[in-house]
Amino acid sequence: MIDKRVKTLAEAVAGVRDGATVLVAGFGSVGVANNLLEALHEQGARELTVVANNAGNADYGLARLIGSGRVRKVICSYPRSGDYSAFLNAYKAGRVELELVPQGTISERMRCAAAGLGGFFSPVSAHTRLGEGKETREIDGRLHVFEKPLRGDIALIKANRADRWGNLTYLKSARNFNPVMAMAADLTIVEVDQIVELGDLDPEAVVTPSIFVDRVIAVPEGAWQ
Amino acid sequence: MTAQTLTRLTRDQMAWRAAQDIPEGAYVNLGIGIPTLAASYVPAGREVIFHSENGVLGLGPKPRPGQEDKNLIDAGKNLATLVTGGCYMHHADAFLMIRGGHLDLSLLGAFEVSERGDLANWTTEDPAFPPGVGGAMDLAVGAKEIRVLMMHADRNGKPRILRECSLPLTAPQVVKRIYTDLAVIDVTAQGLVVLEMVRGLTLQQLQALTEPELKLADGWRVLQPPQAEAA
Image (cartoon, rainbow over the protein chains, first blue to last red):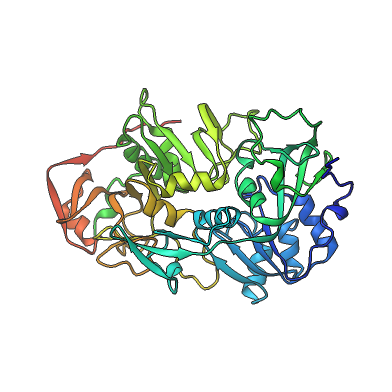
């Protein structure tokens, strides 16, 4: 019997190695697997490279990982979001490296990795500082820059409902980066509001098919939301 | 300079003016800041569909008290709503819509715009803060048309519409129209053409706040916002 459910948050994040690349889904405070991030802090992995849209909020989740020096590098589009003081302090002190990537380029690089492709040419960032140093090609008269696929060792995903196979559904704009990050990591770990029986999810409504998911944990009410 | 005595447009009036030009049936992305306000000023009876980079097509107005849903936000991370007929998609598809030329129009904020329509809106190069680009570069190259809403000059009267942008570019030659607190200006192959100016402003006064040469359009009009602002 296939059963990807795990019983504890510690079990969910077990085995994350120092130096891992971790895809952290979410946009602002929405659709972020804060309980898995807290568990990863407890687990203790260091020298992490984090791929996210923003760089953490307040003093929990991703901000706690950054604040306690577990993150070597952040690849994101917009660090200045919400209360990003944990990142700002680490950035100013030179304790964390920032790779700034246009938002659509981050998501497409991960989609590319998920699809088994070797990269793509994009007009985004051509003729700008963010495109400097990249291979270029003129396609139909327009300059494009080459973007490499971006793969994670781990993806930390927040979904609404899952079954024991790992099929996932989402709520509203909390979907955001979750489906693309779930497809782009070697080990995809998911926290959900609710685990339901196999067959209870409408097959037409499943956004992330189970093939992309490795571990699922239901987070109780009152945990980090 | 007498511009201080002029009736400059408020942020909401600038958004109102830009909203008047959004055509029926358009798919539109509104950047964070002043552009976001334009959603409230689309003329009644005109159906426009707003796209949000975080995976919303059919973004609605702010929720009424009691209707808030923490899972539904806009690109500025404000609580939002979905209009009837709206839907959600994941990030890669939201940016496919942006980059792939599927949006008819994007209204963006700017620090600087050049006379050729170069756009600078992602970094002020302030060493005290990390830069942030978000979806600005994707929108700038991907939407079918880019229009900018910006204050005409900075607090000291220094022009922000320049011959060459001094700040790093978001994208070259993409801005087609500029709405400021003083004027509506088209970026054309023949240079900057003033379509509208606020009452009492002369072209000479506007020119003093603008680095590249301005031409006044035949049939230019007074930029007249409604007296009462929408709720």
